[in-house]
Amino acid sequence: MSFVDLHPDTCRQARLSRDFRFDGRFFVGVLSTGIYCRPVCPAVSANENNVRYFASAAAAAAAGLRPCLRCRPESAPGSCAWRGTRTTLERAMRLIEQGALNGDSQSAVDSLAERLGISSRWLRKLFTQSIGTSPVQYAIYCRLLLAKQLLHETGLTITQVALASGFNSVRRFNEVFQQRLQMTPSAIRRHKSVSDYGTMRLFLSYRPPYDWQHLRSFFHYRAVPAMEWFEQHGNEGYGRTLLVKHQQHQLRGWFFAINQPEQHRFSVEIALDADGNLELLPLWLQRIRQILDLDTEPVIIHERLLALQAHLPELQVMPGLRLPGCSSSFEAGVRAVLGQQVSLKQATTLLGQLVRQYGEKQIVNGRDCVFFPSVELLAVQESLPLPMPQSRQQTLQRLAIYLHHRDEATETITDSHLLNDWLDIKGIGPWTVAYAAMRGLSAPDILLCSDLVIKKQLQQMAAVAEIKDFNSFSQTIAASISPWGSYLTLSLWHQAASTKAKNSVSES
Image (cartoon, rainbow, N blue to C red; front, side, top):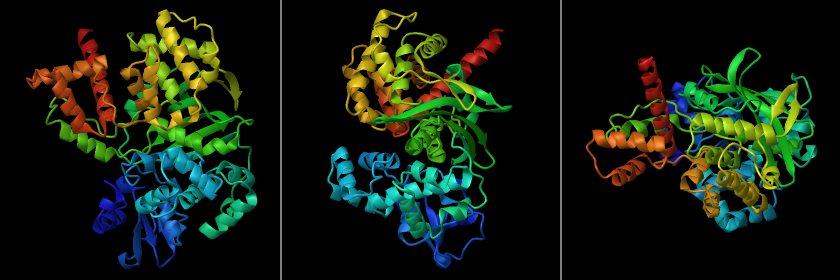
């Protein structure tokens, strides 16, 4: 359901009840005070006659409203719903959020449109129709909201905040901040102590429910020591090292996320390498949101899975499922190649050996870290001495060499259609590409019917339903669950693991 599908009465009820399911799906403009809020704002609810609803924070700002200091709209979870289903708009928004329009010039818009394969006129029309503002205005407001969050929650200096949020100069940052938010950066920072940007803590919101137990278990069974961990300072959570690159720049560090279900958010401790480029922080934070799948619509997905039980009565539906992400599509691809025709335990052992041998080691804020091996390093290796078939080692090297030499290497982060080119690489088939898209890009509609575990689960369900044509059955299921096939894949994996665990207990 997109914003345009929301009736004003629905918005009013969500606002008055402070329904977290609608947080980030629309914003509430209070015309009498000149501010806009999240529908979960704790302030006294305004009279409906003084209220206007907006599809995005950027649209509310374009109407001359300023963000509420209590509910802080910049901390609302992102909404896939109002982005719509158009692939071009989705790509454009992600690229803008990564800094594609940091120049704010017409040439930057033209370059983005050319990259998307459309005209700049059509690009502007897409934004105006979908979220009520232009691409440049959307880019400016993305930067402002990130800057506001950094000022609220971190000890970064004003200069560091300006750089991290994508402004070319502190002067420009101050001007835009005053014009758009009607306050100065120092007014927000007034009671904040300034510290080095090596460590910080941010709060990342999500819409409930959130099945943290299953997501954390998924990570745990596939974890690589020193690259991933699950306890820190006596707190349980999920941490990992992370490196992002763009052109000649990079930013490395680690994060540790602790779920705070009462507040529907994660408290995320972040440590960054002091030599990294702080301009990549938006991309770095976006990757964390992708790894934890914070911007999904759990209620909509749960309703679709429940409806599927008409075809799959044996399906166990768990509310709040989240897709476990990786640091990149390359990491997801490597995990997939190593997992071909071996058990999960064997694949994880091989991955650990690969990371220990070729991953860069560095101390970041007192923690000994290992980063996932880079494409560049694996591409130049003559061989990968791992205990697995030579053909699989060569597949890994061919993938690394392919990505190392392609001009659009940075786009593999966001563009799932580019992964189809991997099929030209010897040793890589549709299952590997689909797995890489699902975990590396968080593609939501990947039903891995060719996966042995998934195929076995579906075959058992087809047998119960007395359906003999399995191919037709699987196609019907894929069409019924679209565009949330990845969440059915995850459900079936969990179901298989749960059944295996129960059988082990019974046998013992």
